[in-house]
Length: 596
Ligand code: HEM
Ligand code: HEM
Image (cartoon, rainbow, N blue to C red):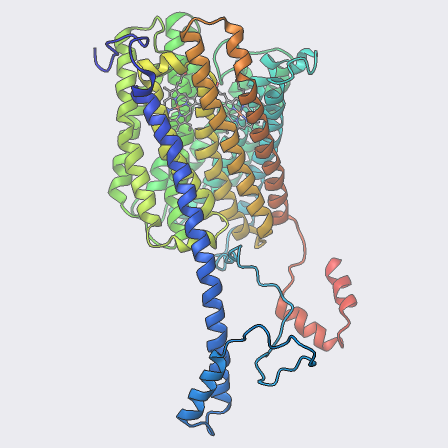
């Protein structure tokens, strides 16, 4: 049997199993990278301080020279240089004598603090003229997405707390079983899907050098999708759901609204590609159009009445779950990356051919791997093996995509620190590699026996859906909203959002991976089930702490979005300076004027 384990897990040492080893390596990669980045950053800061000092001296010298050019001969210049290089003994100003700068060394003293710890973010280039109506549509898509993110993750936050305080409430509408699908459906179909579609409404026409085929269809798509989430959330909380299938708990009329919204966007994107003004279809649109076709097929197929029972239902459920994550979220987000990375780095993508290779192999392998969710189930053994082999095959598109993105970054790493969006994109790319590899590790029979049903799967879900998808979407929002509205978020708050989300995700996922492994081992040893519940407590506490950080970061993100879209007068430095001069320095009057 291909890749089947010949020994039972009892006979195989845990520490020599490939899955556990891969996971240890995966945890080690970001940690080692973190230490390297920290060391390099400290070294850079020290170097920057030194350089700044040298530069200051050079500037003073140059100014002196320019000032005295006519009268200075080479000896005098050398003397000036010597004076500038003169170092204080640090005792000059001590003693009883009044402090006196007899050598004239202290020039241009300043009280201004120079903060060398934060790189200044560069302003985006002057934005090209973007249709005001399209801007409005994109912003409403993104705004709605952020609303669902806040609601969905507030529910997630509460669910995380419930693991520690299971008796927090006794209201049926707030029970774990009802709230869990509210969280997953809102973050999947509300936040991620709407943010992707919103960014798509900007990207699809842009890469075809044309305008969107129909703004009206875009608005209808948004109405239908938002309506499905309002009705869907209420009905899930009321206990009205589709029964078993995960991520398809919405009853069919609710899902129908969602699918109509998706179909309208598919038609709109497709028409936009058809009326493109470029000869080729840029690779982003390959990915995006394919993703929207796949989600329509997946959503319809999974609701067909004759596949709602028995083993057929299980196969369709696996197909649905993994096609949704791989051929909807991942495919769309890859399309966005192929547009945004080159745009933000101001250079072409490293290799078009690698992108095409990744595209076709992604479709080939992803359509085969749904059954890896049901390893050891009563589905045919050969089908499970096909899914496991397909999961290994996924290494091809993942490696091709990661190499392509990292090689595009190559030579432009200096741009990461001075950009709002590139750090988020970089995290997305790193998690694309590590999260997908983790998935491959989970698909083997030995590891699946250990981890399936444990919190390890929850860690994988968040590493991928949050680390890859959500981080890339954050990046996309920071990349285009300032271009659309001409308003920047506050640098400090973007930093706060980034670090809280990233650190929160580590606190969330690493403990769950450790706890999940221990839980699986405890079950394997035949210990009483309650032991595995007790042992998880500290790991769930860490998840709650990490979740809280992530949740807070979303509030900051929503605030940043608000700062970028709110209507206010833009302060033009030249205009205000001129006003100040003309108004005889009546600052208060100008401030008052700006407020109105
Ligand atoms: C504040 C941030 C978040 C918190 C606190 C949180 C918390 C949770 C909790 C407690 C669960 C239930 C776990 C269980 O049943 O054992 C869960 C499940 C899940 N969450 Fe989140 N979540 C957050 C953000 C997100 C985001 C942004 C996404 C996707 C974009 C996401 C996707 C999922 C998925 C897919 C599951 C199901 C996992 C599975 O069954 O394998 N979560 N989340
Ligand atoms: C090479 C790529 C990947 C492979 C081979 C893979 C493999 C797996 C496997 C084997 C499981 C089942 C674990 C179990 O139940 O025992 C799983 C679960 C999951 N994966 Fe992946 N994964 C990959 C990439 C991704 C990506 C890119 C995403 C999201 C964008 C993702 C999201 C999820 C989610 C949400 C689940 C939980 C499903 C559930 O609720 O049971 N995975 N993955």
